[in-house]
Length: 66
Length: 281
Image 1 (cartoon, rainbow over the protein chains, first blue to last red):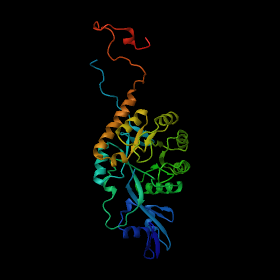
Image 2 (cartoon, each protein chain N blue to C red):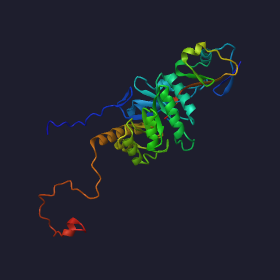
Image 3 (cartoon, rainbow over the protein chains, first blue to last red):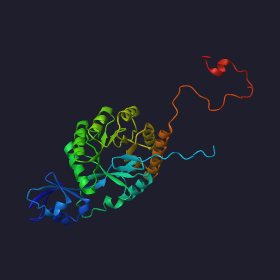
Image 4 (tube, one colour):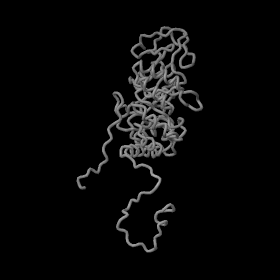
């Protein structure tokens, strides 16, 4: 199924959860935060939140800034 | 005289809500040539609190180390910002994302008006402050040096109000010190100058006005020698704060001699009254 991740189209397997996606992207779960369709999804929910076709995700982390 | 205390009185830490900072310098982590340089600069600045920004993760498999590896959370309080947000809802979402990552209610709120000036959008800033305060955030809010806007932000529940000295990254220093003085008179929450600092004297000037702290990034990171500038900023913050606490002398138009006027030897040249007292004698 197709989702939009950080502004880009991405193919993900059906039934994939947010946690699956984070693992697939090789990200450290404690260093990121996730918004699904403009709603924050808390870390504890990542494993329980199944992605659906057409979801728009923002996965963010911290960078240098003033 | 021998038992006179020759140590300057200690300055109590800056206290805001549940936060306590020994250093009154807040330093940004952006624009450094490397994470290593950033790490060294933060250490030399003596700061206890560093800002970070929130951005989409780098999905490039060759992406290098992350900033997390270079900021010791035992040493520094991390203050996430909402830099790059031009509307209140985006700033609120960004704050919520940063709280999720850091498990902190602390946020440096910025809602900007336009990309060129990076001046704050006063309406969006106020709206976002209200919303974040209602959602339990401890808001340190970036604003212009308009005193009535600062009052409104305090009344909206901001934990600290942070007027700019001049535009972000512009290095112009404190362009309107009298505006800062008025803000200090009207506000009871901590006032921290944020933005526009260019060099050490700007920090000293701000601290001498009586602000509780100064937040800066570019002045260190983009200095020709960032590590030396970080050390300079540390000294300037301390000097300005001590000078403020010491209570400066007033400025006077005419002179007041520093040496005694009594006990002078007979002058060699005949002294006319006009010569000694000036033309209006």
